[in-house]
Image (cartoon, rainbow, N blue to C red):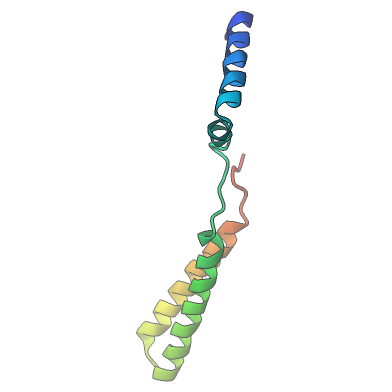
Length: 91
């Protein structure tokens, strides 16, 4: 554990750092926070559309390989949709 004087010195350094470089200090505060990117919203929808196209094409051509590829894409898409709703830091 730090002594009282050490904690006060660290607090002064932190205050100076936040005054001198507020953007950098804010970026350090954000370390460890979960980031939700646009890919997290767009990728599952694109995968759903792709799976639908594969399955439609599979029905039209009666191709078993396309059925399997479409089902795989659909399962991965569902997994991505479910993963978006999981808590960031489960405890």
